[in-house]
Image (cartoon, rainbow, N blue to C red; front, side, top):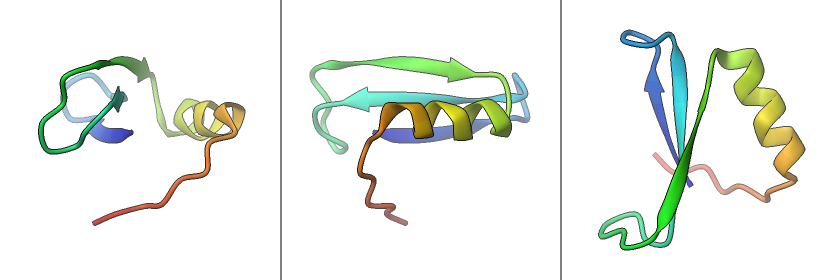
Length: 53
């Protein structure tokens, strides 16, 4: 998963679900309207996330 803060343009966030961070070849994406929706999206996914810099 890669999170893209697009708040300057759309006000929301893109959540990219990809198979490889450096050279993705498969995946999909989601867009959420704001941080509140982002937090709800992540919580509902029940993913175990390791946050990277």
